[in-house]
Image (cartoon, rainbow, N blue to C red):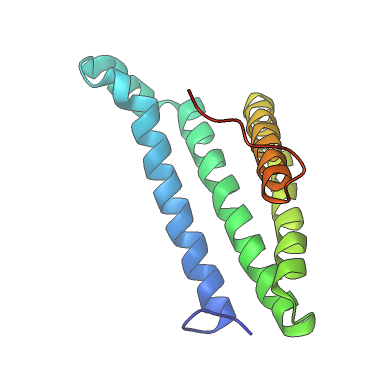
Length: 137
């Protein structure tokens, strides 16, 4: 069953709002940190429509991924009773929101995902004793 305190709907709504606000704050800070000393450029960037849309789209993307993962995971936990399969299925459907994000960020996500996949495959190969570990210098 589910591992959160309250009902599934409340968990999804609170997770959505927390993720959206946190990601919006982080994106605003990262976008504007270099303009701290240049007040005019900072103000211009803060009121820019394109900057606002980019920040909002990124925060919405993260929040929708989070709520989709939580909702599908709660649903599947009730029906499949297997956390491993449920997490994989929920992660796949949550990842479909990546089509909403910008093309250049999707390329970054792809590179990061491929590097994490290679790292996980190497770790599994070493842990299953298929290859020897390479010592650090």
